[in-house]
Amino acid sequence: MSQNKKLFYVTTPIYYPSAQLHIGHAYTTTLADILNRYKKMAGYETFFLTGSDEHGEKIEKKAKTAGITPYQFITMIVDNFKLLWNKLGIEYSKFIRTTDKEHEVGVQKIFSKLYNNGDIYLGEYEGLYCVSCEEFLTEAQIDKITNQCLVCGNKPQKVKEETYFFKVSKYSQFLINYYNNHPGFIEPEARKNEMLNNFILPGLTDLSVTRTTFSWGIKTLENDKHIIYVWIDALSNYLTALGYLSNDDALFNKFWNNPDVEILQLLGKEIARFHTIYWPSMLESLGLRQPNKLLSHGWILFKDTKMSKSIGNVVDPLYLIDKYGRDTLRFYLGYEIPTENDGKFSYEMFLESYNAHLVNNIGNLVSRVSNMISKYFNGQLVKQQQLDNVLIESCVQAVQNYQQAMDAYQISEGLSMILELCNKANKYIEENKPWELEKNKNMEQLHETLASLAYTIIVSAFLLQPVLVDNAQKIADYFNVNLTNLTFKTILMQEIIYNKTIEKKENLFNRVNVEQELKQIETELN
Image 1: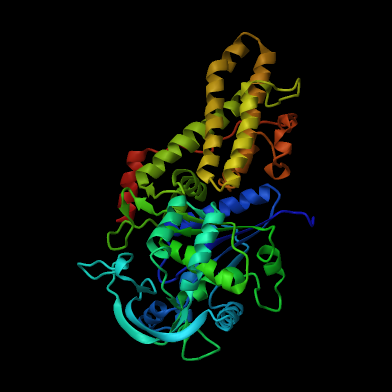
Image 2: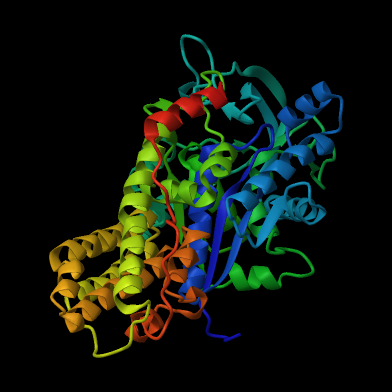
């Protein structure tokens, strides 16, 4: 492997195994997987981390209610996490569990290092604690009428206990300076402004980082009655997974302790404060570099309402995958849900998106072109001259625009380049009317028209690989092209479409009757 190979490290948050994962978790992880696959296509060596956050009072209580140990309780749920990621086509490099021995030892060492640096001190905390969110709440986080947590809706408990604090307040000016000097560090811009205006500028309070009222967690080396609780435990996974402070820190030196590696961390907006304030402060205290970007996406709303188990509108990604295939879900999440704002999901929107883009645009194009080549040229295209027309120019431009969008982590924008290219190809068919060219025996122009269309389809299939993990190659199979042999350089060589047997095949994407499907979904889910 070349020593000069570019490096990319992408992480998702580690998910809390108190219940099954929903479409919001699938969204974050699919974004990471798409970008990881794209970077591999672009010649990067990558490391993709996801996992589960397994300690805490909530897990301890649920396990006790179930009559099993906390580890038994979480393992059943974590197995379902891995089942979902497998079915969704998520190719992570490592799945970390915070109960892994290497992680627990690493967290103890990180805590000790922060303590020895003078950034952790012993004190006493009195306030309202939300068990569900695993966080001490400020007044701004509590509904003044119902006294419920504004995030989860549960009532916080009054707690008074000895605790160790992390000196977040010490890092206020560091954070302000870092944000200002690195304008792309937090995206979207509105999230950065929210952190500044709501938390940093009014004055940061030091963070309680240990608990003494439960036992399911990692004990501090300094005081064994204290359990290191969620945010130092959870955030440290991004380092411990790479072997930080362990006997084998080769991955850490390669994918973090290296100014040349591109580090992207994906997270939902509900945990933005922990990743954009506490995490950079921890890294600064440890003397480590910051990630290149913290991309904090919005929520997926069911139509216009936040998903909630109590309302009954939580969407199960496994149901969608089993019924419509993982590519359909991956496409919807990548294209229809923007990272900068809250996105919307409904079963009707999901099905209409599938019909409009995968069936009518891409599928229709592939079927028409392969059928015409099979019919008019017996499935064979032979190179005659270099193709040079408006459609070929659109292909070259689409590849450039796609790379620019994906390099900026704008997956929806990247996919729109492909859809626009396929739309142009469908219009090109209507404008050039291959059936009339054949009727008038204008075979040279007919060959150029169909060769240009075939090339456009292969370019589109190549660019769709990070999203359509099953169907991108199936599209190329119509034209007997192996996408794994192509790169961003060789895709610009038109020779890839010639001297292949192009076959007429069954439709790749079949149109669904939205009204009938919605009735069936309602019956199956109710």
